[in-house]
Amino acid sequence: MAIISTKYLLARARKEGWAVPAFNIHNAETVQAVMEACRERRSPAILAGTPGTFKHIACQEMLALGGTYAHSFGVPGILHLDHHEDYDDIVIKVNAGVRSAMIDGSHLPFEENVALVRRVVAYCHLHDCSVEAELGQLGGIEDDKNVDAAHAFLTDPQQAVAFVERTGIDSLAVAIGTAHGLYAQRPNIDFARLEEIGQQVSIPLVLHGGSGVPDEDVMQAIRLGIAKVNVGTELKIAFAAAVKTWFAAHPDGSDPRYYMREGMNAMKKVIHEKITLCGSEDRLNPGGAL
Ligand code: 13P
Image (cartoon, rainbow, N blue to C red; front, side):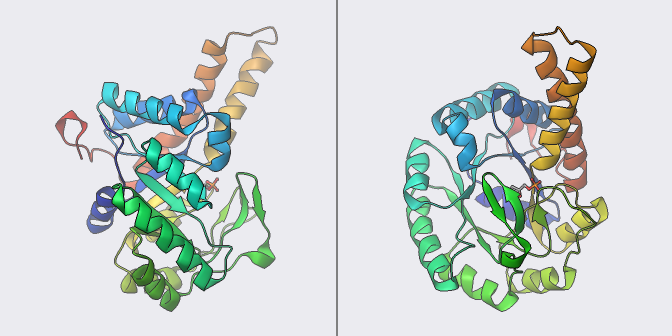
């Protein structure tokens, strides 16, 4: 099964009132864990790789892995570029076969963000690659980037309308009070702001920083227009904790088939919970088609 874009999938999810979970993946085992869970739940999910991920395992190999699992498991293969900031980097990855990209110009002044995103959209749309962009800026740690509270700011609904119209993006990542990484206390999500954005902007909205957000908040966000929920940190923590536990019980152990499987199963448990939360279970037609 080919690697596909997220344009129609996210639009469908928003229309039907559910969300596609996007899981950050880092290596063969984490891709396998996501795809196994997708097969078990007949759910679509997005494999999200940051620039740091593709330094560890090249985009071409990730595409091959995602495409191979999609084909043999009968589930959609979606490899998404998460938080990419560089036009040339995106062009290279689209040429390699990527069909879903986030161009993150959220750190730039509004006009520069618009200009960068427009350029990326012009290229990506020629190649059937959907584009997500962010307005406002989330705090927290993602990949090798740390945005402190002083530099985080929420999405302005009126600017969001202009941003979507002027850039032609397929989905909009909103800053509404979530952050990347774990929360010291319950996140204070600005639902009124999300509702206003959702009323003004018809394209699918994306929630970043999904780890540790209470379930009822995620469900409320989906009701207000969120159609993609990004989860990274919770998966890493579950994987690492299970591997540590395994080594504590097997101090002389060394076989990756055993400790990796422990990590994958712990990660899959979280993935299953997020699939339930997003309402993405049983969204595939017979044969895995969308
Ligand atoms: P968390 O690591 O906080 O779940 O955020 C993931 C994310 O938003 C990826 O873009």
